[in-house]
Length: 338
Ligand SMILES: Nc1ncnc2c1ncn2[C@@H]1O[C@H](COP(=O)(O)OP(=O)(O)O)[C@@H](O)[C@H]1O
Ligand SMILES: [Mg+2]
Image 1 (cartoon, helix red, strand yellow):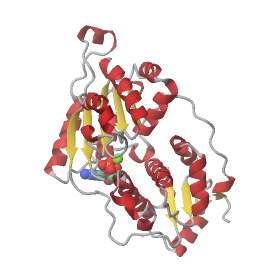
Image 2: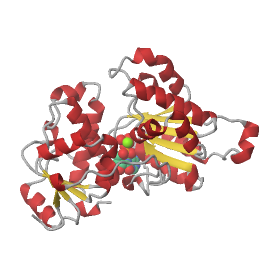
Image 3: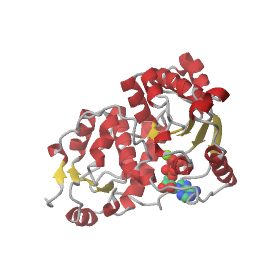
Image 4: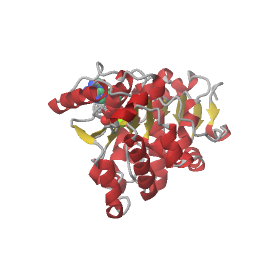
């Protein structure tokens, strides 16, 4: 094997994480994203861009001791739309454009937020974010009743104290949870959350839509890129990857990927079980955000990894987004890995 590339089964699991709320910034892929780089494709997108810009650049209200005199609640903006239409782009651009010092703004994924709040408890998490003036949450998704309760309590706390929250989602706020758990039982919580946000819709088609026919890499490309792989790259078989993803809590995939400049999959896993499929989707999401290089060879075609029944089930959008991201990653140079 190429020197510098290690087999996945030889990789140690990353150490357990602590509840650190410092350094919550956009991931490498969106580290330099700006409003100027967003070219609206439709009128609705142009309107959304200007709404988001207004949300973060409108004159900041008093903060610090003075805020207690005015007692204004934090505002909420909820960017809703299909995948690939630029929601995360606008969220990261908003974070960049907000004129708060870095310690007063935080950017994280919904999964990361749930993990942090779960670790700290809602109240301590509210305190940990008490200096946060703008909180950006990517991919808001209520897929569990327990998460719904802790997130609604947390948001109530920070927004009551004046934190502005901007979030993105594939699901309109009032439809959160549908098809995944008995959302009816949680309607009050969900409506409570929804009521805090102004919804800004984004339409359009997947900006990164691959030219048709993009599929796994050829054996030649795979071998050549493996030869030139950056040190610390990881090589894995399909089963090896599936087992690794089962052994590590999904919220920690990012820690593993941060030290992995590129990933070489000898074959795409075929994922008949929904749990394995969702773990893989989350893993690809993290790799995408972090800019991890990716090469895939083998016989399983991109659209063959998920069972057909998932492509129109409750998680269909996640699976389609995953395929879109995979095809974008396969076309990127491996050396651009962040
Ligand atoms: N209108 C646009 N102008 C420039 N780049 C865009 C636009 N829409 C999307 N992109 C780019 O396409 C990719 C996918 O967009 P992203 O924001 O991740 O979509 P979403 O979060 O809606 O799924 C990103 O690299 C993003 O920068
Ligand atoms: Mg996104």
